[in-house]
Image (tube, rainbow, N blue to C red; front, side, top):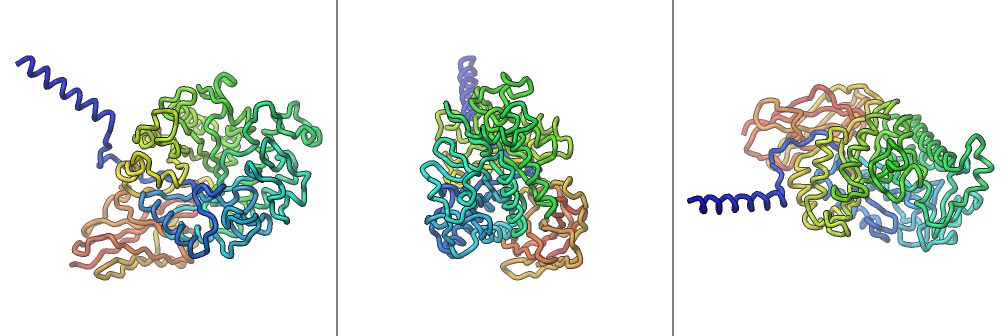
Length: 517
């Protein structure tokens, strides 16, 4: 009898250990109603976007890509529109990107990729953040001769420096800063984007044995700075601050966010730095003082690229998640800064760190973000890796982590007015669909609407994201949402709330009930 009990106990322990290795998240686990869920679409060297598409082909590609993300309950697209001081849209300040046509820089594709992507993304109720790379002029293997003949760098060769195998704008020249600000102003003026987004490329990553060639620029413009490093950091700080100011003066609700390298400073260099041993850091090598941006309110969100596992000791995910959470909590002096986390989807089943061979490593990192209580979501690098679905990890995301819709976080410091619920909501029913028709003509404080659906004749829980069936952008006071997934034999109550340009939801909803069946 004792032997039998021992055998049973051993079996139970084995079953338990196996279940711990391959966890399954409970389907009824509480889902967040508000959570950033973004995917980067990198166009540089055509990482995520094929080159040479016609307008019809590009439209079909964009519809498929954004549609697949929407099905997985992503709510934001980060579309790279200026990969190398060029443009994926018609610009008077920068040439057409070679990455849209696959031909020489400056070749007009004959259509507007950004506008098409923007229309499709908003059509799915998703935000579009326009991703720019300000200083980079070329990629390795390219020369200045590869730039378009009318490129600003050819008109002002004194603005250009070479470092390693690439060319860059010199960040220390005031005219360079002003030009870069003007390119952002053109972008924000001409397009109804939700945010401007910059990544981790400021001063370039250090190359061993090679100094960035800006000593003469420092002697010309560095008055008041005792060393070149502080001057470089100030150059970046000024650009970040001025870009944000320019955006807010034009459209106060448009966000400005940056996704820096995952380590500000190592603790060996600064007692307030993270307990890491990163070979390069934002502050000391890229001259990107992320703390200062948080402190002076130059950004609305920050997305550190914590592209390491929870077992990687040199730069540990869990340590950095906690460090960045303390950072935004401690140093947000002018206004709060939303913290999102950059996720290393590209490393799943493709890295020397064996932790990435576990399909649950990245999904569990997202759960850590949620339990952290400060992080408000995540951004995935990049779209092709989400679709590659190595080890089935993206299936886990869809089925167990993102299995309800979520709203993007608000930025009330850019405008805290609470919108009123829609004036009119009507239902048009057929056997196939229910069309939710919103008329809000007299209201000017609404950017989009949230459509909820509840079974039966009574109002349900508006805080439960399971009832969110769609988000639709306002179109001159009107909007339409088509519900194709309801059961035609059931009766429903639909509720529609308004959302301000800064993401604040109305306190009330306009409700309509379907007819008896």
